[in-house]
Length: 465
Image (cartoon, rainbow, N blue to C red; front, side):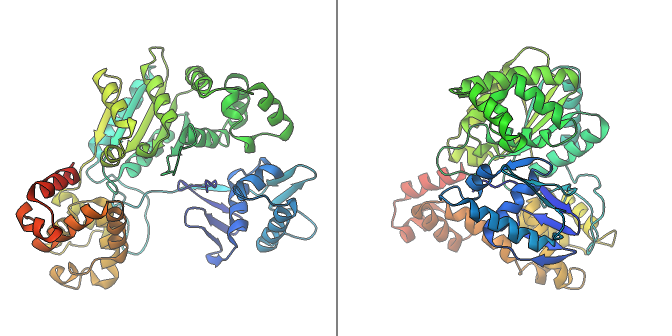
């Protein structure tokens, strides 16, 4: 279910902290248990804080696959108020708008979530403010240069590529934080999701726009979209009153995706005359095709626009799914209309630098960086999880060789999930090969899987690609 409050934000209000991705609610650090639908209702209200949510819209999004009575929503709201400790004489958190819906009225603080990674220095036990990126300084500098060109009116499209856990999101977040601190700009971030069946058109762009509309100058942006891109605004009903929504719905009745495409292309050029825009779209290997079309159209335009689009994606996933994002990137590269930053795993020096930051300046045990690099191949996500697992076991006290035998369950589960998407034949080939060793011949594996050497060679070539 596409509930609001995805991985990018954690919310704080009063003594409460809400983490939609982890589905956690706590009060002054103490966890609070909520039933699933009540939790979903809270997420919707908090993400749209300050804006009225229509009853019908709430019901449709909390119970998308069922027909329920309005009383179910009222029961959820009542239970939610009781959990939050609403005073009997007032509406401190959830305001009722009679005959219309509900509005979350408490002051909400949004905290940007960061992808786990070894890029920011931290103490073994406590978190410190972010420091320099580990072996990503050149990439960060290139993004800064692209922003400078975008500020001068030359639109820029940059793709950050690399496999799962390599730090694409961390790099994009670090750059965005730096850029937002240096100048006033429109900034939006949207996340593509692995959807079953046809995805919602322009989903990550709508998510990014929704966040812009709730940020600084959000009301002005909503008014602009109502005039210039109504087909987009009508897709975000939580930003509008019922009367205004009904009027827009009538105005765009029968509108097509092509109209949405034209509206956004023109709107971006108008918006960026006032201030530049940075749009970050994550995991484009899962993007709906309309989003890919929009990126291509924006990149092909010759008119000036102070626009920087940053897209992250995994090449292997895009190839495996035969997703059009790869062909689009190749076509844009051939025309000189985009840049690609390919992230690589850390080398042994990078692993040592990361270890030094985690140990807060204490001397890194001899040989530990080499063993960690061998164990993780410099994959930042793997590296982080292994070090997090080893620290309580005595990272500085035990011999590195002894520690290297212990691998966290979370890492095993991550690898298991990747293996699970393969067909049974490929799984059997890998299982047999793993028994033979890191290097193997097709002949050594073919007997175990009852396939010819040519079939094994073909399967291994496909897996390698």
